[in-house]
Image (cartoon, protein in one colour):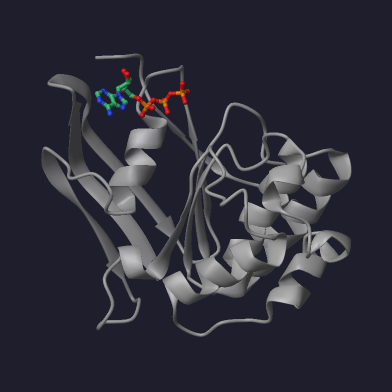
Amino acid sequence: MRLSGRQISCIRGGRGVFAGLDFEASSGDVLAVVGPNGSGKTSLLRLIAGLLVPAAGSVLLDGGEAERTLPEQAHYLGHRDALKPALSVRENLSFWRDFLGGAAGDAEQCLTAVGLGHATHLPAAYLSAGQRRRLSIARLLVVRRPVWLLDEPTSALDTAGHKLFVGIMREHLASGGIIVAATHTPLGIEARELRMGGPA
Ligand SMILES: Nc1ncnc2c1ncn2[C@@H]1O[C@H](COP(=O)(O)OP(=O)(O)OP(=O)(O)O)[C@@H](O)[C@H]1O
């Protein structure tokens, strides 16, 4: 499987953010998108996820499921955790499992895998920042998709959480997955850098 972008330009609010961007990542690859604030890291992830339309250029996934679009084969985890505070931890994950559809795993098992097995009945509003991030990571496990688009995935994670997440990323890569992660801090896993310039 190969994810590639060719000559992508991004315009936001009428202003050019980046132009002529090329990238490529194959099964088992991690692409770390790095660069200063405002250089377009989040915008690039959102372009790949189909949440933004490029002003020019294209993004392609070769070797995926022919009948599904790239966004349908990708998980996008934003830097803000998309949780419903009044729902329990388990209900939040069940919501995402039903919303995303496809082959779904067991919610309890996924919550245990991210270290939230003890908190499944707690309202999400009670979670700490690191626990919220762990719950977001559980979404990657409950519905399997080959392309992971992660915005600052390790923010708020403690050392144990970071280590756990590295293990989860490794398993995903070993099963042929691709990770594109915007980050200001080392991911703790071998990655190729895609360096974004300053604001255009
Ligand atoms: N909804 C929007 N409307 C207009 N401009 C936007 C919008 N969202 C982002 N931008 C602009 O696009 C540019 C790139 O933003 P983006 O969030 O992609 O950068 P980033 O590299 O991820 O930054 P950071 O390191 O701070 O997270 C910034 O100048 C930002 O102000």
